[in-house]
Length: 279
Image 1 (cartoon, one colour):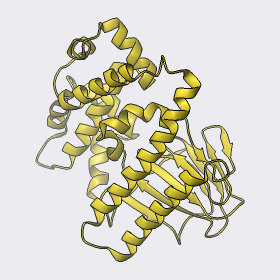
Image 2 (cartoon, one colour):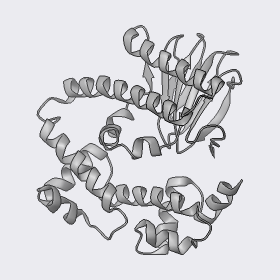
Image 3 (tube, rainbow, N blue to C red):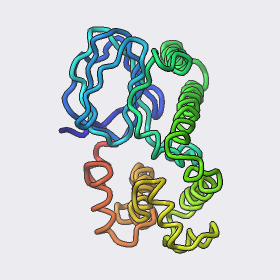
C-alpha cells in the first residue's frame, strides 16, 4: 500500500493519461479524484476489498484517499483523468453531496447510456485541450470537470432520494448542510466550534451534530481538521512561512494536532510535503 503523489505539470490540478495508461498498478491511494473511461473489455480493478470488472464504455471512479489497485487493463484499454481534491473542496454544492458520491465507483453504459456517453464526450474534450493547449486551458478543463461532477451529482442525488426516502433527504436538511459547509469554509482559520456553526445556521448543537454526522459520515472535529489541512497545504507553498506559521494561520490551535492531522490526511509530515512540493 503506497501513497501516490500526482504531479500536475502541464495544467494546474488536472492531468490526463491516455496512450501511456498502465496495464497494472499496485495497491495505492492519493488525495485526488480519478475518473477512468473504459475502452476495452477485460479490465479489473480493486477498490478497498471490492473487485470491479467494468465493460467497454463504462466509467470507473475513485474518490480522494480511497485505496485502489489496477489489477489488469488491456493495452490502450482506458483513458483516465485525475484532478485535485481542491476542485471538490472549493465548491460547496459538490462538497455537500460528496458523502453520496463516494458510494459509487462504477457507472454502467448498459444501464445509463446517456450519462456515460456524456462523461465520455467530456473526457475526450479534456484530451483535446491537452493536445491543443489553447488559451485558458486550465479553466476549460476545470469547467468540463465541473460539468461531469454536476451530471453525476444529479444522477446520484436522485438515486439516493429514492433509496433513503424524501423525508430524510429533505431540501431543508440539505440547505442546513450547505449553509454549515459554507460557514466552515469561510471561517475555518478561526477558532470556531460545532456550537458556533449550529447557532449560526439556526439549529441546536445536538440536532446539528446528528445531521452533520449523517450527511458527512464523519465528526465535526475531523471534518474541520481536514479543511484546515487543505488550508495549510496552500500556505506551505510559501517558503517565507515557517511550518509553525502555516499551522496557526490554517486554523490549528496547536502544532501537535496539526502534525497529527496532516499526517493522517496526506500520508506525510508537513516538512516532507514541503520538500515534495519543491520537486
